[in-house]
Image 1 (tube, rainbow, N blue to C red):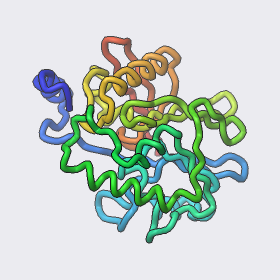
Image 2 (cartoon, helix red, strand yellow):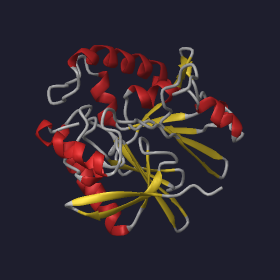
Image 3 (tube, rainbow, N blue to C red):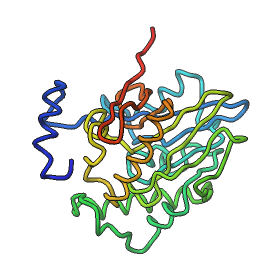
Image 4 (cartoon, one colour):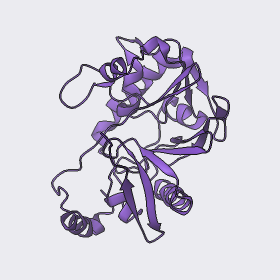
Length: 260
């Protein structure tokens, strides 16, 4: 987490809330929605062989009665491994009947001969393999790809693609509506349920354009808190649902409780 000069404050915040200080847990939540005959998926996780930490998507979909071929539309927020890998299985599209919506900015970035990582604090040794992975998967998914601009409405207006740029150059977030209900999928605007809300300036080193990522987080959190918008976070503790409270100085993530 960055900036380095603030790390002692981060540790104190974690201790105060009895959170682990030796590691940052990374949750992965994949959202699937139904609208009439349409079935949509928002990112697809790591994919791969199931183990005790990841690879549960196929089994989870079976439990709710959804087969991969029933997915009719898919949304790829950005091309990091934990979002794109699940869209590919055995070298083929995992959801063969689904169009894949990605912003033009995101697609262009990863398809460039040499994507620009000059501003990121990511370990430079990890970049070549990450780029290779993204390019390989985008090539497999290219026949399904639909370049979808910010502001586009899909599923009859039920889903609006919004600007979440910064974490990656074309990182998308999604506003989902059903009647009077609304859900804002903030995707990777927050990788931690305490730190990145308590101080939106605190950022993960994986951001491609750190300053833009912070600006985006502040803008989205301010709006979500002001409007009491129900939110969903890809990396927030399961089930990833809650609301943002607070103000521009400090926000809090208020999770919804599971009901049994």
